[in-house]
Length: 222
Image (cartoon, rainbow, N blue to C red; front, side):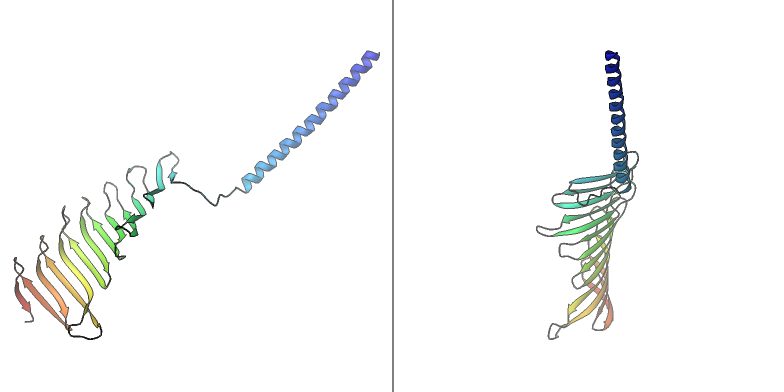
């Protein structure tokens, strides 16, 4: 009997221990579930990321965008999964020895960069259009004292065929640095030689023609 009573007490003690263990495991599971639910409802926001390159990919792992750095300049590139070259590229670039500026290049499927928006080394704006061979056909340039539009030949070494510009020029014989707006249209050959010039000066318009040697051959009015 003594042995049976001792055995019964041990069994009861073991059952109580197992019961307490089940309760403890249940509480731990419930606590873990609460933590998971709270984490799902309120995701942790990381406010600061340091990286040299960040890539955006689609569901198939194909790159559709990247943010990177090169030679101290930041660059953002946007892709289509079927193209190896970016269709849109924004970044900062070295313009001259000690000047930097922003550049935006817009491409098209199968082409390089038909549209480019940039800043010149003298901090003026410039818009360039190119043909399918990546050669300049039009350039709009902001000048420090006006603006200029060049229509180019679209060749390997593009030459200006038509130039339209509006600039401020010092008034001849004027005093105190007086300036006046002057507009001009020039029609040129592929060798950058002016053939026809339409000009505004002294509150009047004029038309001039030139020979292949650059010699004036006619003017209206005289």
